Length: 275
Length: 275
Image (spheres, each protein chain N blue to C red):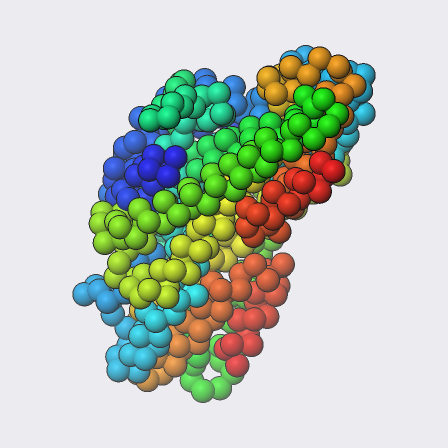
């Protein structure tokens, strides 16, 4: 993720190369429109495609459609998705798109790829992990059998962001005198200003990632496509209880994403909502 | 301005049309690169192209090149300029591009046109008016002969933004059930949420406009291309004094643009710096 996003951004590329690549991917409009609909639109309005664990979540789904604050935040993210060509995205980077063996990692299904905001990919991946976390109680035997697995998920969430950030900054430092035109060496010419610029860039990217992640979570609970983590909870009451907590957390995250400064704080907030 | 920006944005267009138009203008990379260099890069580094009223402004130019806060802000605006395809811009909309008679207004020199952030055009126009304001004392006979003209400039600045905002919102309301895909009627389905969305949109656009305007002002004082308003002040000491105040105001505006809520506040701040 860090390599794909870095090497297709203006941190590595000239604006000439970047514009050429953007134009090339502008033709993939159909798949982008699908995302616009299912992630940024349908959950917030009456749509024949929406579904949720009824009747348990009827009021929760209605509350999403009535939440003005949520609608303002989702508009901002939709604009970013449609207008901001920051880097080449996978465009559907949920955990099921990632194939892993002990020695190798491969990502499949690149048909959604386009130039968009980096946080959309990062958020998609984080969102699936967070949904998995909130699904655990629905699979529990009532004792503490899911405690260790929950801890593993939380750790994976923290490591995903932390390692991404670390590797991304390392690439930036390695190539800071290269062909990238966002931060010219003649301007960002002292360690202090470069460090400040990187801090600001990563903070913005973190907040974008949380916002897009939250949007992806919401659509997995009250939109058209759901996740197996919840779907496989056979008792609908139990499933709805898990989904409600995930939805509550996603709403909190979408509205208050800018107040989080570190991934550890996100995980702590998850645990608080889940308890 | 309100019509061009509105009708080429996602407030009026489908994402399909928008992406097609973006791709078309991606080929105008040369002129964009010129802007990237002269507006977002050169003033902040040592460049053979930079010039200023020396020796009077030597320290002021150096201060721009040493100002880390300024460099962080300009990086954010440069990223927006290069990545955010919000609407079709003129791309060089300073006052000399606008031809006016009593009955007609025409804009010339569209060779910089591309899809970018709306605030870049609005800011360019405002910036030239603000520079004209700060140049007046350099043309004064020492008495109050420029007072009325300064008042006229201030009024034009206020009206430019106010009328733009008013007309833009009117177009939005007129076409809110049309083909625009940014704010679908099924989601922004009550007057309250639409009003909140418009308020947020215009506030962001206002801050973008002030930021880009400030960047354009800075480049007209310590960058390659200057404005006639200052150039025609023959006494270099007098010219430098005017330019310094304009530069100080531009730096203040670039750093603190988000603290301004209305155009009236901007004009008041201009007058304070100028006194």
